[in-house]
Image (cartoon, rainbow, N blue to C red; front, side):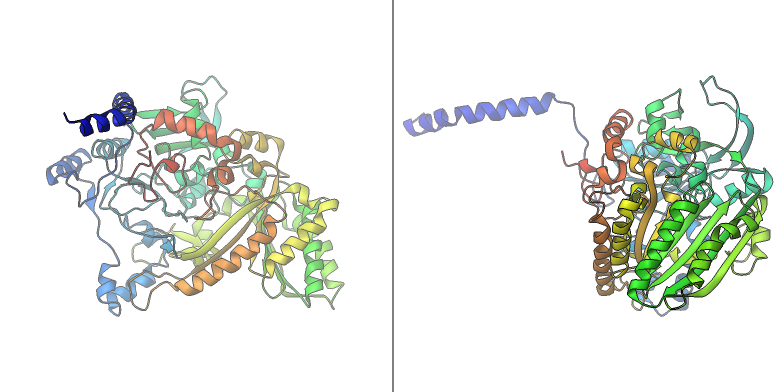
Length: 602
């Protein structure tokens, strides 16, 4: 060895020692997650391996094709025209494993079909899919209703667990969770592919009970419960997740686990609002049912203020009226501040008859009529009440003009309906979407003026809606207590409303001439919407946000979605899915993966 080599080796010795120590540390450390594989990778399962999976799931393994591929090459064809017409039918979308109810979000995500799907009909099918994905390092996606605004129920190059075929609904007069010593209680057990419309029909129309679920009839039960879950009457009955008594779950190790307050309690708690698709594949849920209100109804009206100062006063009138008369278990849904100084009331009630509801609203209507120079009612007050048992009865609802839209496909089940007001969401492409909980303290006299100023300022930029059923201030003590025992951001407990601002367009898809999303318009609208929400954030600087109705680009999403509950959710994730098999955008543990969920970051 010459002198120069000796000097170089001597100088490098400390560095080499450090590198060797680091290398040894890594070598003996527990291995971390490995990158997931794509169809183009050498490690992608062979045809023989896929065939084995197909046999294990009874032939229910599907190879998926892009529904829009033909439209890209022939956008003016009759087949393409028919596809885009069908994309306004949520039941058509739901029956396709390659489609999602929202087609994308400009500059965020686009609905892409998985490479293959297991059309699960049994829990054993789900187990086979989970094991196959883990053993072969595949990106795994779960879809029931497919309503995710965040794109969590789709991913290219993935294996899809499609639970649409698991739709059994069973009513219980007296249910006791496994391993628990408690009094039997009325409940309903639903499989993972069930939608809220059929569940309401079974529980209410046929069973004479009520189950707290979602407002939209085609939303999946499993996804909504795992995200916390709001319906029109959450102010009366709490979160959907707060009614969860037990779940059957396939975890990342392929085990079928029962989760309830007595067995796997941390998994159970995490499923109650921790976000769908993060802790396992839920295959079955049992939810507490409640006494059915005798009467359920709606109140609709539209008021226009004649000038800006009058609109500011109108906001003051309606917020004060809400605080004194409506912030209680009977009322839910929306107070909407539209452009052009328009206020739209679109609310529902339960436990009141039509006369009682009308009497509550009459002083507000009288105040509007008493100021004709300031306000005018452009859509007359419409107040209606129905027997609670008929509120979700498909045949009855079809007889009411303009209330629901049916599935127009030949041979479609007669129960396939959707509320007419939800039609605009079907097949939408989002431009922007944000939400924030507003604490009830803002309604107090010393803060209400600031609240009204912020709401007025926000309405100068974009339409905003106060979803009063999505804040639990005014709910019964027992509903708040049950909702507190969930993973939801505690901000929901003392919020009077979830304020939501959104912008979207009709079905569109990149690369299809004549049907392309309008990206420049989307970005302008996103800016206006951001400006509107910024006015409210001046009042509430760091608001909580509802994970299912939130900003795709939320920077501080763990705090916004779960607040102080996030560390506990991380612990549950580490226990039940330490390698991160289950990944969704801004889901628990997703900070450890690349944005597409294929590459571990540590």
